[in-house]
Length: 178
Image (tube, rainbow, N blue to C red; front, side, top):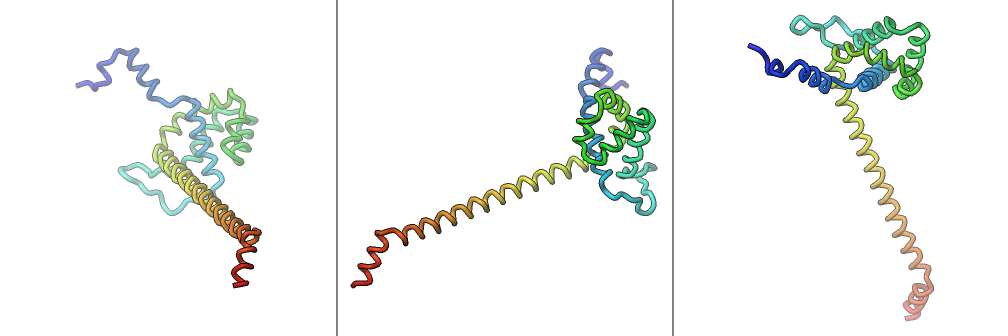
């Protein structure tokens, strides 16, 4: 019994696989961003490795090691050192400063790393979205607070102007004379 994928011609199958697979640039950007995020953290091994159904649970340190092994295997010493130095600063530095040929080579070789740690990518994407929402909320609250402060300040200055205006002074004199 064949799968529903078998009903397509070989050419259609290839086009479906290509459309479903992420672009090499996406793989490079995703892996380098996650690598940079984990690289700046102080990661350590905690206790024994947990196993579920005979497989070890994915951990950030495993991801870092896999990424470094693949990178060291395919890059020259100069390219590897450049990649290491750039990745210590930010993912943007890696994306902008590495030569295009190096990026293309890493994207091709990092396919296994990309597909080997889907839970880490999913967790990091969720954390990134939560952080974005938090940042947006903080910006919104800050903008509302500034608007409120401006309104209060403008109301205070308008009241002060009303008190100091000649009409207000004249009415105060009239009231005092009565």
